[in-house]
Image (cartoon, rainbow, N blue to C red; front, side, top):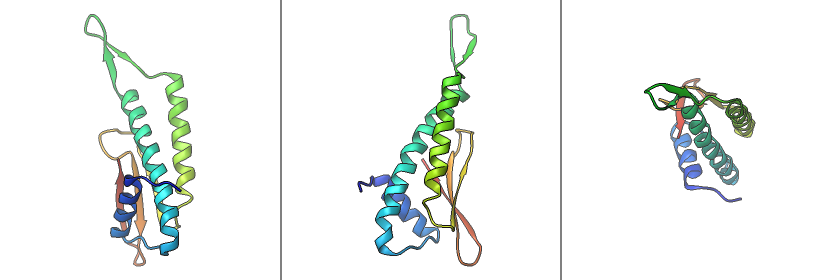
Length: 121
């Protein structure tokens, strides 16, 4: 399974946040995290387009919020949530619609119940 540098980096960040798995499973998780990173970038792009407009002649702003864009964003959200189900139970995903911060967050709960957040760019 091909993994990306971003997927391996996310796995490393999750380990730093208290995530643990068997080394045999780490390649599977790196692949899943690679897909999550790819879809998170698409999700960010769609959110930025929906949040912004573009100027037209006369200084007015036209909203670029289209039905097709809403449908695509919903597909990406569904795909991200499906991928999150492939992660262990102590990792959950949180999606936010404001493109000024992390839109996709992975929250790791360690053995003591402390939650640590890893943002996905």
